[in-house]
Length: 221
Image (cartoon, rainbow, N blue to C red; front, side):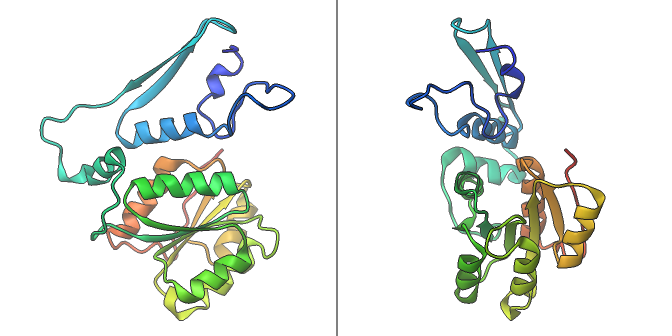
């Protein structure tokens, strides 16, 4: 693995140089998912390589619990892949026109036992929201048909969303961007690539019955 790639290998959509016919390589999602799952378990993953043509070594370190505390219920579900419904289960809608990013985020949330719907446009999101109630919405701002600022206003106008929590997901994290999202009706402002651990803390707060309404938290990048 090239030395310049190594520090970024766990970032979303990071890829080495592809062959012209694109027959080698994936989407750049797998290692980011591994890193997120390892950190959610309280562990870490590291990558080592002597350079191109020398192979690569990945080390995953996870904690060992003789008697796992109740608070790690989310992690146990993530490890097993099970998605049982329970008091901590949320109904979550992810809206992003980047289908790969949306699907990956939804997969991680499902591993934690949540019921997740995915839409790739504002129009589809509004159509689904009229028939299905969600506890939490994660909305991209730069949507092509109706931007996230307009979408959150439309969703908040629905009576069924009176207690819903809204998270803005955007590539912009300047002060005026945060003001815009808060004014539009978002409770949280997250900057891409999303910090999965921070998003999980928001999800847990909502599941614990601590509404995010009126709060604004950010992840600097």
